[in-house]
Image 1 (tube, rainbow, N blue to C red):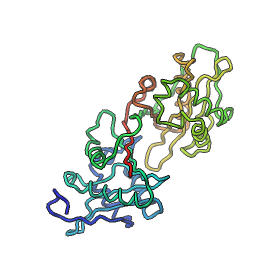
Image 2: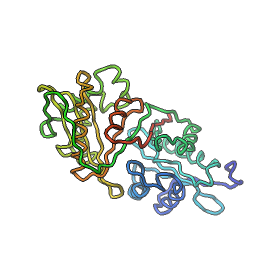
Image 3: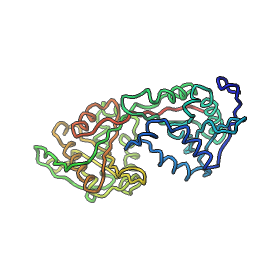
Image 4: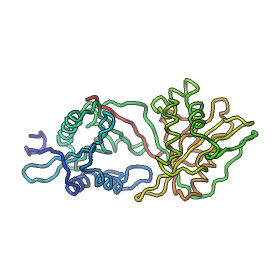
Length: 337
């Protein structure tokens, strides 16, 4: 029996019925901001539904549903995927209809999810909580559920910024002797080396990016560079990847890829974006970013997006000067199983 739920008993079980789960999920999500508003660089209802339909019943994907035993009405859902001894909760889950969020349904769903994850070898459960910048109240209920279930914040909080690529961008050239190389002139090994120099060569930088091994660990940086070139994150033609040389020496690096979705506008994602410490405050990074934004626009991207640490005020200020606006705040939470 679930307290606070009018003495109604629940049946909580795994679900492989895609239609049943999808309809229950829709009812649970229908009042959430991203379901209603369909923001550009955030979760998307149609994309989420497509993912549910393509993964339910597949190995490594677990979907759980809570049913009112008397009416046989679904009253909540939670799903997760299993990877490398970790269980990763689906976005904004557990999901419970607005009228039932004051009950214990979500907590009971989380208990079952934890039990199932642990029984299948997971040693930790993680969830990414993302909400519009400056509106933490929209995620307050979910955050309370995670905290009550034993989740703790891990890593540093981050932000996403977005801009509309509506007009031609005219990059402002730096006042130094420079040359720009594009992707075909840069090897992944060189890219990884430049990333490390830009992000982790000074102690204060290493602290800012300590959670992101793709820019602080040489091996992970190389893997990231190789994945970008291979198109694993999205299309990344040569003009999306640039290195600026000052007097023949590398000084700044910018990369990007375009995310093509059937459910969202074509969006270019910047990363990495970095300038070596000794070359900062000369407009080099801004110039490369402006060049890359124009390349994204010419490619057909309607929007551009970039993410960084909430504490990285220097980068946030640069992006805002370029026309980006703070869109989302996000942070990971983890529970040891």
